[in-house]
Length: 207
Image (cartoon, rainbow, N blue to C red; front, side):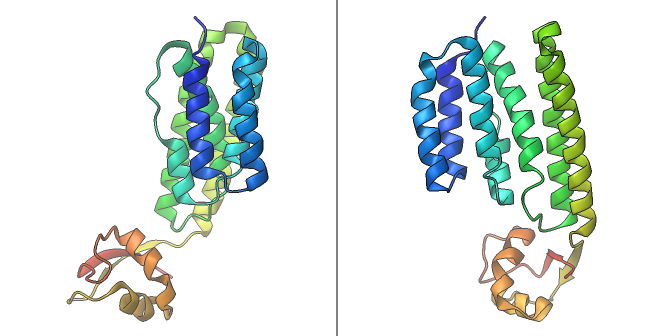
């Protein structure tokens, strides 16, 4: 059973729109996506893989990584193809953001590892034809996990902050770091939906 080109291209187009900010890359991807339906199965697989790599290399933030890691409802050969491309993409993308904390980097590493496992499982359907890809994907997943481990070691740990009274995030950022401009990051780490009235107990970066 062949993979559904339309589903794969729609997925790539959505990711490109959400992640790729370079105008030249975005224009090139749009053109390649438009031309891809006319390719034969082997050429289509190669082109889809190359487009996925461009998208992965455009990831610059944890939010981009999260978008790339979102699951896609697809089964059969289409689901297998997406799993393989996702595993490669997350391995590349996981090394790119400046992870704000050790826990964030460790979560990214776990997602890269899990995606690698899914990709390897999907490649079992290819038999001997997938041997080279299997070896390459296994290697790039392992390398990515090691790099993210190094990033985690350098990232700031999380501490529990307690204020006793609700304060605006800008005030807390200044008190904690001497920089009110870090209020946005403080809100993100704390998971607060009310930056003007922060919780009295919340997670924050140690530095």
